[in-house]
Length: 426
Image 1 (tube, rainbow, N blue to C red):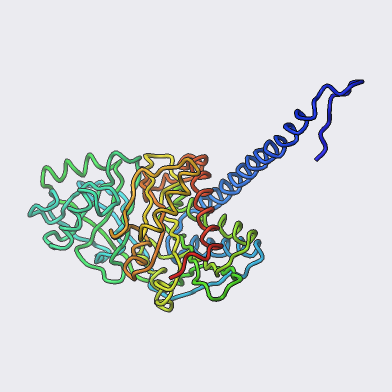
Image 2: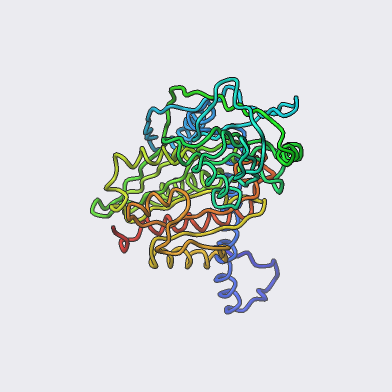
């Protein structure tokens, strides 16, 4: 290290001052390097989320979903790895005509993907509040089964009292249709159910209060489709160590910038970091389609890898919404106290604290539930989102880039630690 002193006839620094300056210089340079590295990562995250958002609708098996698989594969190749494509066939819902008509006014709707459907003529009957004796029940709900509206909807679908149901997107969200996931995609049930924009809430609610007639058309069919889980493997130096698995969903109803983009950006950063640092154990990466359809992509992936659920040293689940700028709330989920300690100790070192958690022993949300159900170990990151399943979840307005950068950095460190530590085994 060369230290340039002021140009004078005599050196005005003592030997001790020179030693102190030399000792401080690497710290300054180190801090500068760290800051530059963080900014570079932030730029990469921004580019990934922007490109993902610009791909448009990411519904499983659609053109946007297939384009995303190709895009992810190119990213994997850029790290010198071979993309692993886990493909499967399924029957995709194809909406034909989905509308609500009342007193001559017709509005577009989107059917649930796990209900029964109508023909092109639909169902006509008296409109009323959900749970009443009306032919067509009306409910306002967030796209969340745990919300009051979501619970009322599920109850009505199971009871089958109504011939059809209209779901109005909660008016606390921006105008648009926030779509509910099809948790029962492989076993559709209940009456034809359509979702409409909260921009149409007033006149539909007035119709329900007056008990007039309306018509619901939920006309859809099924077409052959291809699902693709995109993956990669980084080989570790010790074959005797159980692998680390890092997963994220990659599909969703709309552009899903803050819902899915953060997880995909983190997934790619982990591939980058572990490729550069090397791993003691194998690290398996999987980005799964079918998230919004009851996790059919992950289910297919696990069907041929049942032993991996318990056999992995750890699963890292990069879940939904931690990148959002709208009504955020980040949560961490962990399978056991050792996993929890690793997560929270690392977060503390990054001056990060989640807004909540699903503690060990409690069934988690998102894809981590598949690992919980199979008695595997996991650390999971996800959150709430004021634009959940909403068409306004687009780059850049929906994303808090600074916050996302910090959480991605912390979880990437967790992944690197797990890939290099011999203390973790199944």
